[in-house]
Image (cartoon, rainbow, N blue to C red; front, side, top):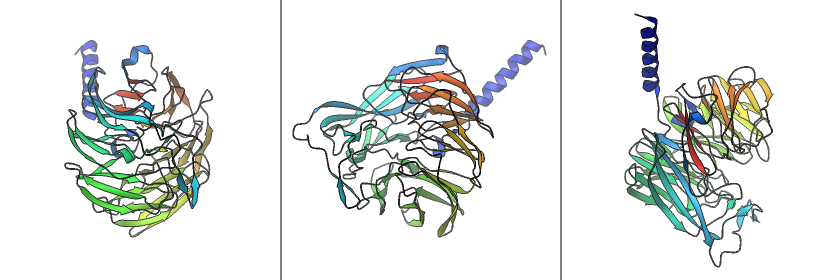
Length: 434
């Protein structure tokens, strides 16, 4: 065989392997909610030539794109006119005190909440559906959106949650399947953000509100929307997404909270164990690996808890009180837990012991971060609010190996599927590939 034929054969084998390892990105932070792709063939440095397509997105949203096969799904909220009679900001209960958040906005305006579908190869809009249109029960933080919860799909249906404004299911061609009204879910005027997760035949949502008097977690039949179970939770407002954990020969649904971290049987809602909470606002989502769940928070106090399930109880293996962010979630790559601050400063911890391998890993320019990290192979992506995507080499020393500029702000976490990085900018959805 000639060298040219050998080279072509090697390329063919590599492409075949890459296709076989291509995966969907079905919900918040991808398969298993880890933020880590099993694929490896994504661009590290890119130019305009790597942008496969760029498609305008109406409205405002911080939800991440999700990908199944040749389709990308997204949610958005379009703000309309002022609704007469709603000038006064909604009041909330913070503990036993009445509270009105100073950064609450948009409580007095009509909102149109939409579900969007795009062709993953071309970016062509396939369909658009209005899930809800009208006044909203609560406000949002000025930096947030009414479309912050990421959808989830099983390849047959897409499930989207807008908090008080409802839980909806559509088939992948956009036909409405069902909707559920879960009642008013008040989150201190900051907006709803926890994303739905799938288990078996169920779609599960975490609904923590205000001072916790009405907080709950609930499951619905994914085919019909019929309620399957509902469990009250004595925890105040949170914005994290629960994670499914394999422990002790069973699957546990672990939901983080300020007061408690609680594990449930995802099939029945029965509480399996509860452990210490972070005592701070729960916005980052937990991650799981090495037999432990890692729960973090960044405001008002910084906290990391490594919790191991132990039958009917749980053991806090180690804790840490620095290096975390207010919004962005941590990521686990092999045996390393990476924490990011709101400024993108990284800490690499030994996930088993909590011992730092490095601290203070800085990006090249000052920036703020809302998007959570994602990873492939030994590369970690950090997307800043300025639209810079930093590629960090995973390992015992900190090294930024590439800086890629998108050209518009980024608040949503990227998705990784079939060799393409999907990034939701403030006004456009991008597909970036080799």
